[in-house]
Image 1 (tube, one colour):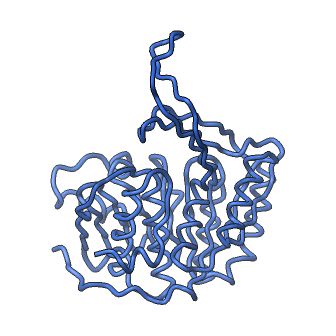
Image 2 (cartoon, helix red, strand yellow; image 1 turned 120 degrees about the horizontal axis):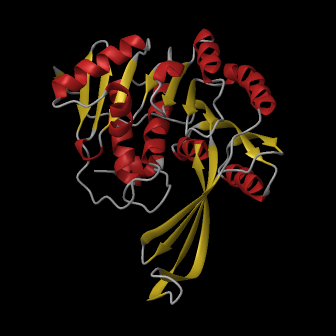
Length: 316
């Protein structure tokens, strides 16, 4: 049976301490006007009028935690390049304690989006996998940073930065820290022992197969939860809201009725909000309610975005 929870107040987030580990990337946006089709090929010509750079991936998760008022540390790997330097600057500007290990053989992941008339026309990705020795050094630093955090977020974008995720989960749980992971791929065994996983509907379907109704979904989610020794599984379901599957039952939050402008980065906001609220002592259902509200804020913005504590407070 699905449980309901009362309205959830927003706690004082200034004491929350979050450690974010995972794949960082730089989101670049080229905005321009489209007035004609190219004579060279049947594609629009975009006259670029302005550009923006925003943190993406685990860096966006960290930025979302900071926007909510938490104290945030970020641990990741970047290339020895301009994009990596830009990410470091953006993290400093956001007040985030970022330790970005440089790998000379790595190109910092960059996602370049070309936007014309407020519509994304093209995305170009630049990426490759990091070096094993750099990742080993990051693992050592992860262990030393555990004592200074309340909650660990493992933000997996499948770029190779979380090769040692199984060991990270073991170390964090041994230290008594809650571990929230945003999973990727079709093998979730590597996330065994995490406190909470936050797959979206499509990602979960890759792992457990299709379901025809909520009862079947709950059954599949519970089997997976027990297989992976998770405290809970939170599934984000787009227009159907989000559902929390835990040992003590199922809790559902309907999607907020508002205009959806851009869903990119909404999952980052969800896991960031969950972590900050759990660090403040809220229960998982209470944290989910606020994460659902925060997601409703960011989908109304273009591109990777954040929800501030003030926006969350003022949301009706």
